[in-house]
Length: 218
Image (cartoon, rainbow, N blue to C red; front, side, top):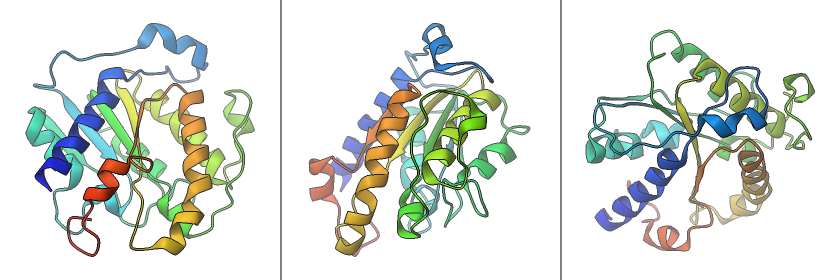
């Protein structure tokens, strides 16, 4: 399991090493001058947003705690909430981002995660828009909610690098794998559209084989 954690950490480091930021209200084309890389993570502040998997309700550490310890971040705030969905209604990830803006405006890196609960709750999947106008986002769908979240996260934290974690496969719940697949595929399309670096854990066969089904180290 230690080897699996090490592998996961390296995958996530790829996110922040390539991350970029988008000024509030700007188009994706304006992003090219804002790319950020880090020679060291010492002294940086990282925020994590997501659902129970990021919140680490089982082992109380999760990837936020392990990454922060490994790379000596100045501060690591795990602000994820169990049950959160991407669609901006009820308990959603965007609410976490909004709530953190005042207290954590000095964040250097933001890692977003979500989509599993949307798939399992059969939230309408929707479709990716052609442009970047937030008025076109259908926030009653997963796709519209994800674009909305990326747009406003980059706007609320214009000086931070933003990355995304695409969730791993739940092998112990095979009935949910088929349900998640289209959400995962659409997530990746949207992240690439918005130039947001991501860790694709869903299609990582090496990581999947190391997951210990039915244990705290799932």
